Image 1 (cartoon, rainbow, N blue to C red):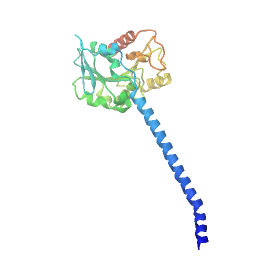
Image 2 (spheres, rainbow, N blue to C red):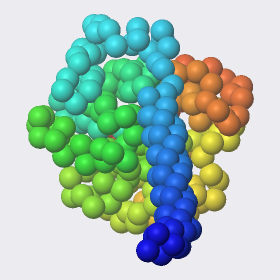
Image 3 (tube, rainbow, N blue to C red):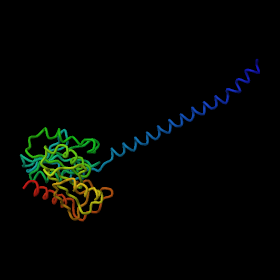
Image 4 (cartoon, rainbow, N blue to C red):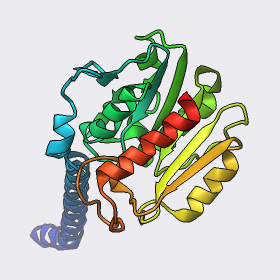
Length: 259
């Protein structure tokens, strides 16, 4: 009887060892997946929480003056100039602090187009592309425009393509549309000659999708200088100041849409 017990135990030992190996492999796989998940989560958080900050010039432009009253709102910022009829909903570029666009938008409000500067979740317009609807409900302007910079412009154009009846025009700052926009809705495409961020082939495709398109290429301008947030990775070097680039931009918008 004792020999039979020993024999049974001897047969079970390989089975037990194999089960332990399988359990060990499962633990190793689960631990590896947990490490990968933690690394990916950390990378996503770093991406979402790092962004281009507005500089001192931008922060100064958030102050009201004799021409424009600037107020912080639930959706972002409102630049209230002399206009009673025209307003722009502006979507910032990806991972750019929205206040970085204050100098250009303050100047645009002075010229007769008030501006609703929209703050996006994690500074990504892809997460808040429909925010224009709620913003526009707060005001009674006769003529609404929508636009934005870079990714913000692309998602503003996407929203406009689905709600063309709500707008009088689309303004794309270093951006392009990926959706067809009919002839009835004017589209302004404004880019810098030294822009190395926006893809030229995408701009060309966007021109074809915007049937009623007016374009301005600012000589010496680049991608980042539509805002005031410093040098953007991968961008070309501008040969004009941000102030000059923004002045030409606003003058073009006013000439085409307001006069």
